[in-house]
Image (cartoon, rainbow, N blue to C red; front, side, top):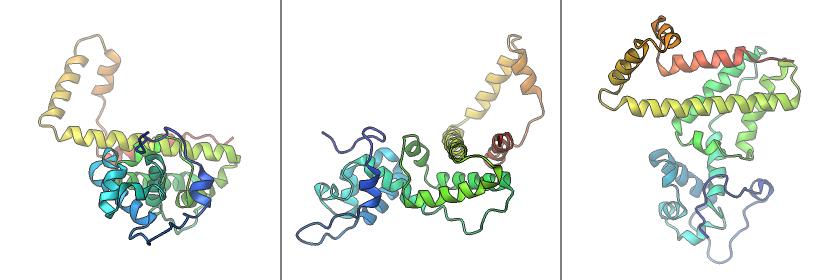
Length: 238
């Protein structure tokens, strides 16, 4: 059975992963650590995508035999859990919530977007069910504090955070895909011609009316801010 299992394929025991320290190996002290393994895996994912992260590639990066990695990360799913939590350590918030929960929640989302753009593999890694590690829990704690003024119960606050994270991950994945397409010569012009032809064919009056409306700023930041505003401003608090 391969140890390079895809995310979400089997499930990771959170107690084993987060509450029990890595058992020291017998024999000669290794020249690498779990931290070094995770750092190497993150660097590979940042440079080449999740597909490049295999136990064999990571072992080569840290100068170890592949079998020696399994006491630190027994499979790729566990390694992904460690990677997600490792980079979540970048989501540090020092200021307490302001009390304006909608503004604070939007700030949380902007932090998440910048974070995912730095690590473009994150949206895919987050699509599977994951048990939060210590760094992820610290950011979740801040988000729950942001939502305290809403009066929502605990379950609802967790749902709002999950909804927000899913929105950011989906938007960033789309943003990355669109950026790749924009680098294809004449792609944008071809799409514009296609939509103009469809709007003029008489069979899509609603689309024609929508396309004739004044254009809004289409920069990635402006588009994200606009979509986020609709999401957060529309959240109910009862």
